View 1 (spheres, rainbow, N blue to C red):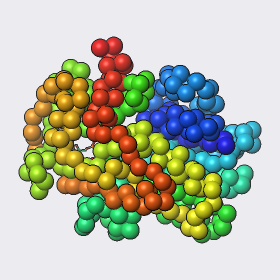
View 2 (view 1 turned 135 degrees about the vertical axis):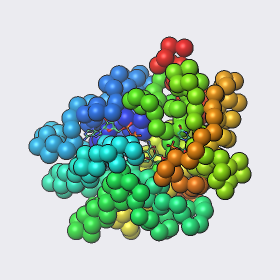
View 3 (view 1 turned 45 degrees about the vertical axis):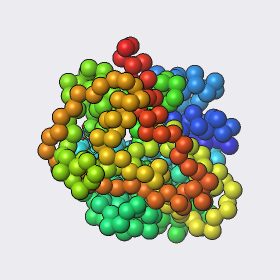
View 4 (view 1 turned 90 degrees about the vertical axis):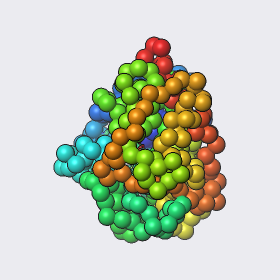
Amino acid sequence: MNILVTGGTGFIGSHTIVELYEAGMDVLNIDNLCNSEAFINENVDAITGNKQIFICEDITNEEALRKIFSSHSIDAVIHFAAFKSVNESVEKPLEYYRNNIGATITLLNVMKSFNVYLLVFSSSCTVYGQPDHLPVTEDSPIKDAATPYGYTKQVCEQVIADFAEANPNFRSIILRYFNPVGAHKSGTIGELPRGVPNNLGPYITQTAAGILPLLNIFGNDYETPDGTCIRDFIHVSDLAGAHVAALKKLISKKSDLQVSFYNIGTGKGNTVLEVVKAFEKATSVKVNYKITGRREGDIEKIWANVDRAEKELNWKAKYSLEDAMLHAWLWEKKIRNI
Ligand code: NAD
Ligand code: UFG
């Protein structure tokens, strides 16, 4: 099977390429490196012992995409390529709409021209906002998006559903990721945020490495056991494995549904403070932190009901939060030469 991966040099894409090779699939990775570095591809190849085909291209460029589809055999597509910064999306909405929604439309259009009808799409638990009931299931209502980034995921889900309606051969699995953390267990690939990180995982590792002076924990007055927010933190390699499981399901043609949605999390919520403690326990390195005010727009608590993915994709997260913290630390130490 030849799998086209868009955005395959990024955090989740690179880990997914490792899993795809482990499952015996071949990879064509298209990434314009707008939020990643080319050496990650080499590190992925070093882990897998394979040479992925890499094309540095912007997938909003329809002509270029057509050339790629015409010169490669492609059985299915995993579409990661997007901008992902929640804060930046508020400042640059048009860029986010063009890159996230525009690229998805362009990709679907080209897939249709070349009769490539299997797609795995990266969505997010952000579509649920603050759910009324926890753990959140796939049938929970979609809430008004708090940011342009969140809205792009909702629109893309709808674009894919409408495209399916008009194209009976098309099948898609939409994965709603919870909070990916960690790195490959070898410490060879991991998250590579540009500038000061927004997300908790790299903020912890960079603080532990002494690159940042202190982790600000945004609020300890939420209605949670220790007052800090709760998320469902999933090891990125587990998340990556869910894409292989989704592809296998699409390829087996076992589902009657043209478009299916799956929560991809661990099924367990952890507070922000618990994540810090898990890091300290796994690495024996202290994290300098202080409690500050709430961050605007934060959801108080969310974690996934993952029954559907377990049952229908035959997939389950395996790594613990401590594993994720340890692997993220191995990666941080590698890139900082610590
Ligand atoms: P990332 O930024 O690390 O990876 C995205 C990759 O896509 C980057 O390598 C970037 O260079 C590339 N890219 C972006 N626009 C492109 C374009 N027009 N053409 C070609 N390449 C392009 O992000 P990630 O964390 O790996 O996220 C992957 C996907 O998962 C995204 O769609 C993101 O919205 C979604 N997602 C991420 C998270 C998270 O917390 N990381 C959570 C939920 C959903
Ligand atoms: N947090 C801190 N300090 C920090 C960073 C984060 O206390 O320096 C806290 C946040 O307040 C939040 C939790 O850690 O309570 C997680 O925050 P992240 O920014 O890591 O993640 P979010 O849940 O806010 O959002 C992330 C991605 C979104 C995605 C969502 C679900 O940024 O794009 O997960 O997948 F939609």
